[in-house]
Structures are given as structure tokens and as C-alpha cells.
Length: 188
Image 1 (cartoon, rainbow, N blue to C red):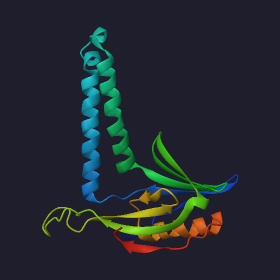
Image 2 (cartoon, rainbow, N blue to C red; image 1 turned 90 degrees about the horizontal axis):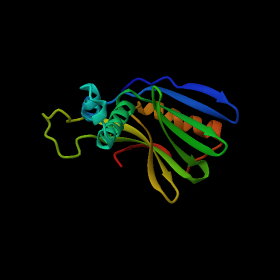
Image 3 (cartoon, rainbow, N blue to C red; image 1 turned 90 degrees about the vertical axis):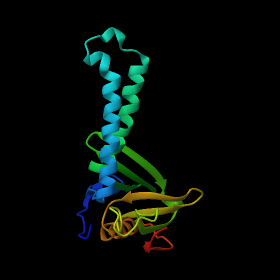
Image 4 (spheres, rainbow, N blue to C red; image 1 turned 135 degrees about the vertical axis):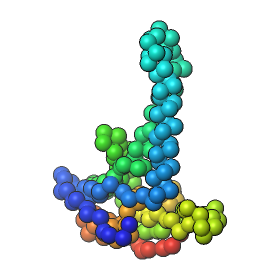
């Protein structure tokens, strides 16, 4: 995660959308995302088993619920492992969207409520892993916002620090927003 990711700047009516490339996750988080997707897919297959075995008459509410319950972890895993982010600054709002294909999840923030933005490096070996462990030394970069009345919220994750700093700069320049503090910190 050392190189700066390209940000696609798109001017829209009333604002600017910044589209980031696919995020780069540490190996341990990529493994977690794959595992979550596999478990969700297994739940979906178990739910669809009456249909797969040719007895559609036995497909009931519990099977349908198993399919729905399996779709959620598959979707979350896809957003985590294969997704990318976009940030829209328009009409006094900050809209952050996570997207993987047709799957989307977005969050809205009032720019007037955002008190500060901060790039942080979060270590993934918080549990005190030994130096020889797989996750020793792994970390992930995040862009967090301190939102009035709501505390800190993670806006973006999995991008190089320089890219996250550029997002802060573009929000200030294009959105007319000025934070009290923005900078890089180690941990939270």
C-alpha cells in the first residue's frame, strides 16, 4: 500500500464525486473476507437444497430465510474484498459509497457536523500476536471523521495514506469545508 491510488474526479451537478480504485487489503483481512463469503455461500446452498434436489414443493420459509441469511455475508465479503469507494461532496452533504459491482452501501454526513478528518494507521495484531505470527506487523489505513454528536466514524479504509490525505485536501478545496485538524496518526 505504498503507491498513491488514482482518484477519478467527476464533476456533477452541484458537487464533485471522487471515485477511488479497488482497495488493497492486508492478506489477513482478505482471508477473512473470503471465509465470510464461503460461509455465506454454504448457507445459501443449504437453503436452496430442496430446489437443487428437485423437490420445489419442500422449499419453505426456513429455506428462504437461509438463502437471505447467506446473502448478507456474501455481500459484506464482496464489499470488503472486491469493493471500491467513492466520495460525493454536494449540497452540504458528504456521501460515502462502498461498491462492488451492483452491490452498494452508502452513508450520509452533514458537512457542517464534520468537525475533523484524520488519517490513521490501525494495527491488525491488537491481540498481542507474537512477532513470528502471520498477522504480525499488518495494519490498515483509515480515514475517520469526528462527527458532532455521533463520535468518530470510519469513512474510507484500505487505501494508501497519501490517497486519504488527498481526499481531505479535495474536500477542503471543492467543498468549502475547513476542519479544525486533519493529519496522520498512529492508532486511535
